Image (cartoon, rainbow over all chains, first blue to last red; front, side, top):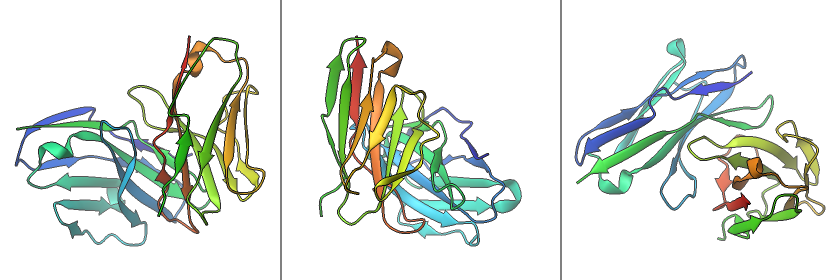
Length: 114
Length: 113
């Protein structure tokens, strides 16, 4: 069975602070993909980043960066210099080829105050 | 190009009625998914189509829920004898080959009174 746990439920920061969103996953498959999606108040789920299980290299893309560690089954996401427009619900999700479906965590509500 | 389109955006119905929710995926995407999102929760998988056939319908909660995709493009999620517990946002997504990201529509907010 696949499972995604986002232990944080709500985070509030002041603009320009860095914020890290945690994600822990469970799967028995050796090949899998991890995603982060953003859901702003408008409701649409927006794809942010994807990582496959064979590549633990951590990257930075603009203000976004992620830390993928297979040893701890974690896929944490960091927003640097947060902005008010970053306020949204952020979902971590897991995809495996074995069942071809995306399993979501419960989401983290991020509020960035001016 | 055009994204995933879902209609209607909002649907209010009375308990016991039948509803149909429509999804028009991104052109060329063979895989289509339906998810349900309740308030404060993450999206929950309902059903997945590869082409015209339902490859996995294990997430459908009961036999009141049914989905079709007769020509491998547009899909319709059908709910019979709606119950108040069916109230949620129903999300549709499509994707290309392999582990490419799912692209979601704006959803249909279903309210059963």
